[in-house]
Length: 232
Picture 1: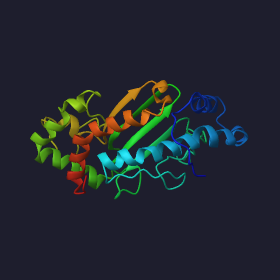
Picture 2 (picture 1 turned 180 degrees about the horizontal axis):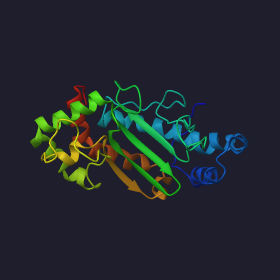
Picture 3 (picture 1 turned 60 degrees about the vertical axis):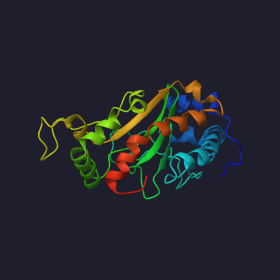
Picture 4 (picture 1 turned 135 degrees about the horizontal axis):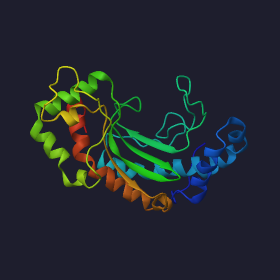
């Protein structure tokens, strides 16, 4: 399925599908409502990705907006429940990842958008990178404390609540627990997110708001790319 329609926003039908899915998260219901999913969810998602191509190319040309269901910027709705106690087959939200051209999966540097009936949030960063890359980011923070301080204290970053990401309970191996940057060195992910009410996403100009937030994430995204020795 491809979409040629212009993005007009994520309408109430989009969120209604996920609200009902949360109460009927099973294969029979999903298969019965799959035409709704394709029309009310997939089509506007593809249209959004296509609409993001130009602004993303202008603000971060190394990142890709690929309007494809498989192998593109959309996350699949199907959950991988093989190793989870939660056996629900479907995700109860929609999500996008506009990853760096050198990235192969969701653990690469990228820009993110998450939509569910109760909240919508978007921003940029890197989510649980592999151990070697995480170590490299931590080492760069320690080697360049002034540059990192300028990133985390940048007003554009602080307006969204600063840099976030779950961390270790203790210091990483080989790093002192009283290191000046220990709060950030404990992190396993680094991201900045802007949360809004779902209604904000209901119009075409939502693309502009998302692009503006992605632009504000540039100081952190540039630092991460520098640490990983890839072009921003």
